[in-house]
Image (cartoon, rainbow, N blue to C red):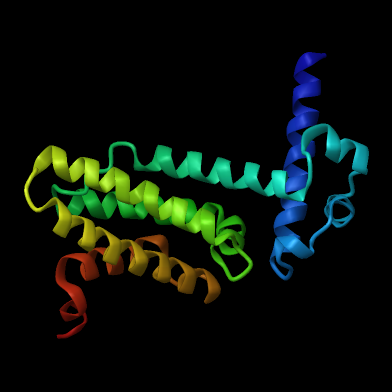
Length: 190
């Protein structure tokens, strides 16, 4: 009986999250109500309140799950070593974006939460700085600037890729990011 109840809870949370994500495609969170989330998910309000305080709590949970997944993806990422290893890690990150395209499109898009975008960037930057300091304790401040530059550019690429309908594969986008990182704009000249 417990396993069946757990599946029902997971299903309910999934449809509520999907309902909120669908609404966020066109509407900012401050214009979304619990009632509209329940209608989008075809769930009654008492069921909603059994799991979440309000639409903001639901959004926070979605964002925390995303941050947890990103944190797990970054484990073992080597920011310093070899280009090929960096490339393979980038491919994994962009494949995650493909697998979670609608969620990423919403959270990183114009109706997305800028705070969570900054949290993602801070998480990646902290991980990168920690890895860099382990390998090379010199020039930490310069590396921080370089990571900030790369992260802002990377976020911009992800946002454009998502808004353009992800016409390129995760592998192609990862290759572009790695080429820009290692060779700059000269990677586009013959």
